[in-house]
Amino acid sequence: MQQLWDISPPVSALSPVFPGDTPYSRKWNATISAQCPVNVSQITLSPHVGAHADAPLHYSDQGAAIGQLPLEPFLGPCRVIHALQGRPLISIDDLLPFLEQAPPRILVRTCQQAQVTTWSDDFAAFAPETIEFLAQRGVLLIGLDTPSIDPADSKTLDSHQTILKHDLRVLENLVLDQVPAGDYELIALPLALADADASPVRAVLRRLSATY
Image (cartoon, rainbow, N blue to C red; front, side):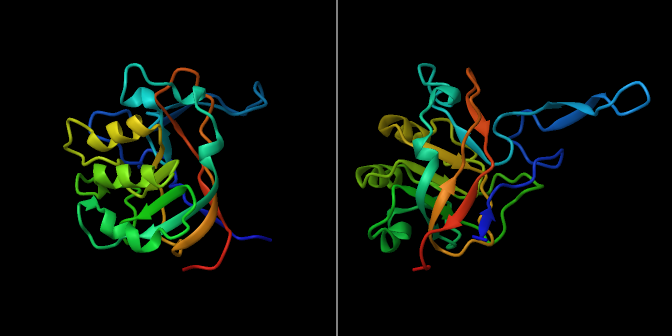
């Protein structure tokens, strides 16, 4: 059987969210009993909980909702790059040595262990010029193992505005702790939420070739 890497964190009440965002919660509307044959739950959460895809609507009033986006960018060859230098912004120099013949999807591991149960403002993001550089090389999708491609305290969201400019797709909150650097097939399809600004994804990788 071909190996799969599940790069989605578990979603639970422990899942961290941006301060002020809606955490995950679940309650039972029905439970199995003599009067009821099924368990039926109700869940409440921000679409940015766990591994998720942002839609342009998240960072532009005129942007498309997640359910309106083509699925092709979320499925296909990708490259996982390790950038574990601990710098706050992923630079062109961090990625450039690993971009030869790169596929059009780039996922960046920035930390030894993804934060899946605690919130911290101290996480790595993309420098906008790095996204500009990747877009010029034909990249369709970027992703990383932190909550946002912009720093937590950003009010201008320069990196989000750069993916808007180039119509790139983005995945955030991935877990790349156990994934060797190299090329894979990415499968990370968002739900067809007709008017939402993001969607959870169950992101997985399948090996395409040997690590570089």
